[in-house]
Image: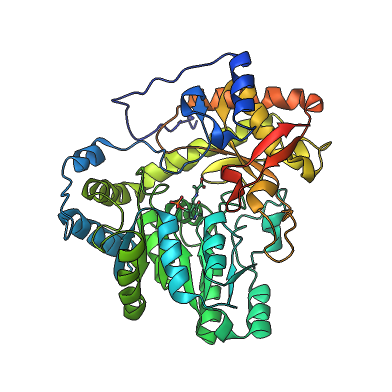
Length: 459
Ligand code: PLI
């Protein structure tokens, strides 16, 4: 008879940070003062913080030891050389330019490769990535497969590129107008969905045909590699570290927000194979980030990052990380909550259109739902819908994405199974009284990345 064997996290906890529950009255007041925007809440008023998995992971004892080994020299810090060789060893790119975080790297590569009037196809937009492409004079074009825009589709690789959409764009605009294809592993805005190796190989073959580069947003590459191991033929016995290297080998350059996969609070880098592009980036980084051997990071942060990269690619770590997200996702599915299928790797994405069908997208259903979950339990989530999608840069109208989502993002190595249970119960309770929930109106809208600072009032 086979016995059930549960898995557990591959670590034990040696330091804790207290969190505090507030009262319902407090939370109603706090969210009103925050303009019904969870980004504007104070963290001390949050019980379980699922705003993001960015910079919120728990570092290991090894990483904290690395912090003590910071070489804070302005130039030539020992930690930079450790970071550089770690990136070369684990990801295989030739040249490294450190940046303060992911968007610093996005800024550099966009300024270097994009000319005014260019088009940048990608597997769905990400907020900062698209903005840097636009600020450099380019236009982002979504060439992800249609399944990615359908929250009910169970297609396992919803991060895949639609090769027909991509080739049609190349033929319509001309290869000289397309500096690179932008590939994210995994696709955040689609619900944390992976791209398959087979698809990436096909994209490589197509871009080779037209001599177009691939720039890889490798922010959550370990999570993507783990899904390939689970789901794609031929990968079950390969270590995640090997799959990561294969993904990277199919691309020409990468931007990294180290605040996710790589288990640190701050940092990023641009990794490049082309020596001329590297030479330009190494020069430009001095203008915006800092000298090319620190790029906005302290020596100690580069050391923690180098160690974090080695931990992030371990199979047992990534299995527990993705496993915890799936645990929460399955609880919500069992309770009949409409979430994006399949369950993503870094968070659960609730379909706010289905959760609050009586609210039109102009009433900001996802923004509303995130506020309601906070009011119910002090759990802080994030809107990923019409507010995040911003306005069309030509017409000035709202972009209305198909996916109107609330993201419950799980920080790495931070919360326990009991926290997951509390979260699931809260979402379920809000779902039970969904008919009583009214929408919001926007009363303040900043020019850039409005979701961070926009303010709302109850309708
Ligand atoms: O927040 P940055 O600047 O380190 O990284 C920007 C960034 C780039 N690509 C992707 C896929 C991201 O998810 C990303 C940042 N994401 C955040 C902050 C998030 O909450 O998902």
